[in-house]
Image 1 (cartoon, rainbow over the protein chains, first blue to last red):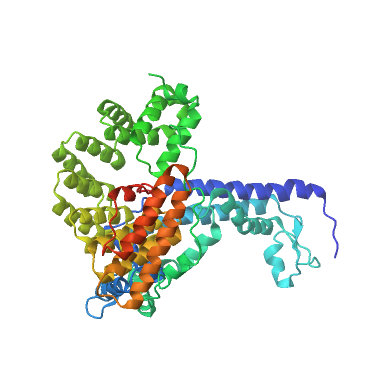
Image 2: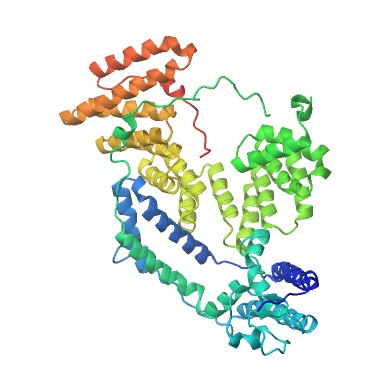
Length: 258
Length: 312
């Protein structure tokens, strides 16, 4: 079914909704920065994260140190009786929203800055730009989507592909996510879908439990690592060709500061 | 005294960019920083905007290095006015007290920071440098070890510890520290070369072989590292001259040493002024391998290579 829409719709509905969504997102980002509480890391957390990094580096770059040194470090980490990863158990306190007040306020702030504006503005757009078809989605949809996407348009015979402004708004909210990464940098407060994903996997992901699991994972990975010394045939490699002295003695000496 | 901008005919933007470059590369050219920075903050303070605070910090540390206490105090006072409750500024005030050798007061400052924020690494490191300045190297080593147990990833600290161990002639432990550095920076030829030198100093056949390998690795990473080239020559000749090695090992090492000697000759041919020394060196090398059990080198030759800096 081919419908010709008034081009005024494009000018006064489609574009304004895009701008509104975009600027609301930017404002949300700055508000979330203002409301952010300082995350205080404990000494233990910092130390653990660095130990994990060191173990990973040992696995990846262990081939640059002599075999004996590599084995010594592997023993320190993985030894059966008192290796670091075997011995250290961190206290696991899952931060549920009830017991940890700071988590609770964080969740509240998250909800206020993200969900509330979305509902408010969605409703306002629905009320303002109602009663007409805004745009057509490029793929065919079944009739089941009609009540959802065609709020306010009471036409039984209209294709489900023609949608109202409210659905255009929701499309924008998710679509502009990549624009936000471009303009505000990664990890920005306007990123709705990331927030929603976090909320879903949310309270189950406790940081302390992670440390124990991370230790176990590192232990397994380190067990599997072997030492392939990168310097086995370094002299032969080196002496296969003449050394390149280009640029070693430059005629110009730096004269002063500039 | 002509100002920096007059001497080099540069504007304030170039001076600011130069300071930023020195900041990013962590250069310790304190006198130059003081010259450029002092002019920048006295003449062009308003044009710098928010950059001025980090320039104050940079100039203050450089001023402490040059004993310019007046300039350091000015910078510190400006920073304290702007950021009254900051740990970073408190550390700077502690550094000034250190420069004035008022170590107890400086320690009190750092302890206050650590009580407030136990994860603050800067304050801990300053406390260790106080111990080092007071000459208490054993305690400094102990404190640094404890620090590294908590913050295993701090490369600066590993390097400092390796230096302290070298000063105490504890080469085994210094080698351990350098191994950490080599693992985290596998493409840095300076760490390989330093490790090889420590192994060479430790002595013993195994360590000499290791040192030869790491000198070769340093050369592979950077063909122009003259210290590594000389080191390769020396460790190979040393092994070849040792009575305990098999004939094959002896032959291999003499081959390596000869190759190193030719490369050294080539390097010196690259510049005309050193032409006279080439014949001296070439003849010396062959004679040494034939007659003397240990190659006799003037210490002057090792100084002839490029100066090792701490910049990775």
